[in-house]
Structures are given as structure tokens and as C-alpha cells.
Length: 620
Image (cartoon, rainbow, N blue to C red; front, side, top):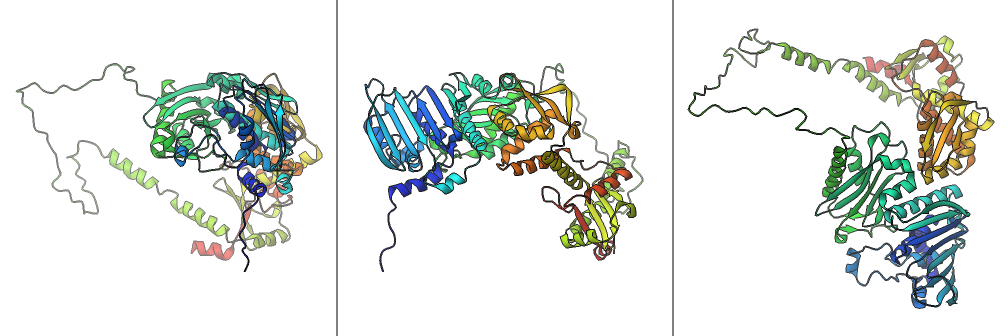
């Protein structure tokens, strides 16, 4: 039989490698800017067109490359950072694998211009799909200029699965933010379709945070500074009152490299335990310095996941550092030995004085096995109040236990009545509020008898379904009424959130939001949908942004549905709210007027039928 295993051509191997290293235009920006940093650049300019589909250009003033180095930089596994395997455990540079440029050149039209400092001529190289088209001497500026055009031109499937321009731009801005925070001394500019997004000068960490996330954040930053033999921590955390309902201001950096670490994130969250407003996230910008031999940055192609040798000890140091920083700024309770004056310390008896033996009083008639306690309690120095109180508290644990048990059983039984049983009851004639008796149970469920047994309606999910279909109709038919705000709510958004707000501008206006942009990063919410006028305008807009950030959608119809889902979830009645009989009737009628009364917008069951036989089995 003929041999079937063959070596892949370099062009194919580069395209495969690009699938791991170059996932989207933001990956190209990240790799090229990190190369600029490794080249000693003090200023980097990034030009983007069509969110990176058409052009990604990165210009730096670094040390540049010789003609030979410029050519070798596009070879796979060609790197100046590693000579032997042991070098992997002492890495302090950004790129080191030598895959990025080869991968980029395999899936794009790449032009490189580079000149070393002090040289009269530089080098120009043009590569198309891993094939060198031209290499020649060139009159260019000192440093390096990369132009990446038509990304994924030779892999249509990859190009087709890129997200919308707005979503891809959001990813690029996020990558630039990470690089800018990790290297505050680096002047960095970002342009998209000739519009300025960032123009950051060389500055310190605190000023860089303010440049990226708004000057208002500066007054809410708390410095963190801890040095141990295992890890050195510096940076800033946000005050609890400045915590936001949106993510995006949480950053870890280790040895100058951005890092994702859910385990360490929990250390921060627990440090803020019980002092954060509900459903908010604290800001943090923490920089770790560790011995490179104690971490492994080579466990993921994007190098954003890093393994620590002693994660548990590092976790405790991070947690303690955050708690200490908040304690210094009186943001959490601390022990103050001066506030209550001196502490009284009992003085022992003088030498030679008589010390009486401690007296122990017992009841010789006490029998622990008696079913009834002896009424004689004269031996005790205290009254029976504590014992009676403990007995009452113990019994209180079981009050309502029988009811809770029934609720749990009913909830388990409700899973038995499937969609067919619900559909059958809906098809039954005369299913209207006028001929039904209702009971609100635990301010959570609405119970009503039906032909086959008992119908259980989840009141919050039912309200979500009603609001969802109303909001969807409002958005599609532009039927909204805007409620003007007497005192417009002020929003301060970072660059990513601003881009998302621009993406959602048309749909938010259709809903009835009126948002005005001021100078810098400040926005004012001047109008909200009349149906939502009772809600906090700032919280509502931030929740829309955060939800879109976590689950971006690209199709306009999906976006309308997504906004309707978010708004219905935000404004639906909560559990624990007692409803009047007329409110229950209205909820019932509106629910069965919906196109899909069985499931909530998020796909959870609204109605469940508990059959008569199942119910009777519970009460036997």
C-alpha cells in the first residue's frame, strides 16, 4: 500500500496555525503591538479600517530590523527571545513563539517597512498568503510599519464567521486598552476609519486609567502596594460606592502581561464581600511581579491564561492586600484601640493573700435521662429565661416546615405536567379569568383549579412574557412614548461602552431613550420609555450595555428581540410582591393573550399542570 502521511506545505501549516493564534482582527493588533513593545518602541500608532477587515496598520518607533531579520521574522518558530528550552521559564517579553507573523502572513496581504536607527535605508517586504512577492531596499522612517490588508482573504469561511464591524471594533478597543494599561509609559494612538478613538500620551498608571475610563474614576481609586517573597502587588482598586453594574474595569497584569484569572478574581470579590451594592462589580487594576520561573505563560496560544506555581498562597496575599487597602481608607470595619480609651486589665491578688477556691454548685437530684426536667432550679444562678428562649428558637426552626415541604413537593410535581398537558388545558373551552378562582401562594405562584387538576403560574415569568411581547411590538412598530427626565441622569462611559451605545443608538431611540453626549466621556439620559419611567435610568442603560457586551448580536431582528428580553427582565414584578385580586385577573388575561403563554422569553416554564392524581398522592 502507498504511504498516506505527508508533510503539509508551509502555506497550509501557517493557515492552520493562524486558526489558533489569529482568531480575529483584534488578535493581529495584539501581536503587532506586542512586537513593537519588545522592539523598544516608545510610541505606537494603530490605523484600522472597517474594523480590521480592510486594513490593520501598526507603526512604531522601535529599533527596527535588518534586511535578514525582516525576512526571517515571517518564518515559523523564528524568534529572538528563545535559544533553549530553559528560556521558556525566564520569559519577560511579550511575543516569543515566533508564530504570529508567519500566521498573519498566511491569511492576509502583508507589507512590512522597517529601518534600524542610524541606517540610511530600510527594507520593504510584500507577502501574500505566505508567498513572498517582493523584497527590496526602501526609504522609510526609523522603526517598523506593518500593514495587514484583507484579513482571511484566502479562508472565506473564517472571514464569513467574523462578527459585525461594531463587534470586531469592540474587541480591538479591548485589546488596545489592555496593552495601554500594561505599558502606561507607551504613547499609543488608535484611529478607526480616520476617526480618533484613543490618543494617549506617555503617563503614569493612575493617569492612564483616567485617560481610558474617564477622569472621574481617579477620585475613586485606592492604591494597593504589597511586597512579599512570593509576589509583589501594586496598582489600584475602586471604592465600593463606585462599583458599576457593568464589567470592563477588572484587570490583572503579571510581569507586564495582561492575564485572565477567575481564581484570583474570586479573591477580589470576597475581599469586597458585604460592602458592595447588589449586582455590582468592583474596579481593579492590579499589577503582579513574580519570578518568571514560578509561572507558566505557555499554556494557551493567546497567552492570556497563566498558571502560577503556588496559586493558593498568591490568592491569600491578593485577598489580604485588597482588605488592607480598604482598611487604610476606612472603607471597612477595623479595630481601633484608641477610640474606646484604655483597656481595663484585671490585676491579680497581692502575694500572700488568701485566694478562695472556686465554688461549684450542682443539683444531686438531676437525671439527664428523665423525660421531664426537675422543677427545682434553685441551684442555678440564672433564671429559666435563656432555656425557654432557646427552646422557643429551636421550635421556630420548624414553624412552617410542613408548608415548605409541601411547596417543595408541589415544585417537584410541577415538572411532571409537561407541555402537552398545558396545551390541552389552554385548548379547553372557557379558560378565562371570570370563571376561575385564584390563590396567590407564597407571593410567588398563582394557583387555580382546572379540569385535570391544578394550574400553577409563576407570576414573575408570566409578567416577563407579557412585557416582552409588549416591548417587542413597541420596538417593531415605533409606538414608544418617551418620558422626559426633570434631572437627566449622568453617565460616564469608557471607549468600549461608548461604541456599544453608538451601536444600540437607533434601537434605544425606538424604545424611547433620549441620550445626549457631552464633551469627553460624559452622557446624559434625558428621556426613558414611559413604561420604564419608574426605574433608575442610569442602571437601566448600564444594564443594556453590559448585557450586550456579554452576548453581542449582529442581526437587527435579533437585537430587537434581545433588547425586549433585557427590558422585560429588568422591569418584571419581583417575587415576594403581594398582588390584589384585580391584578391577578389582569395578569391572567394578559398572559393568555400572548402568542406563547407557556414559556418565559428566556425559555423557562411559566405554567405547569399538577394532575389531580399527583395532588392526591401528596396529601395521602
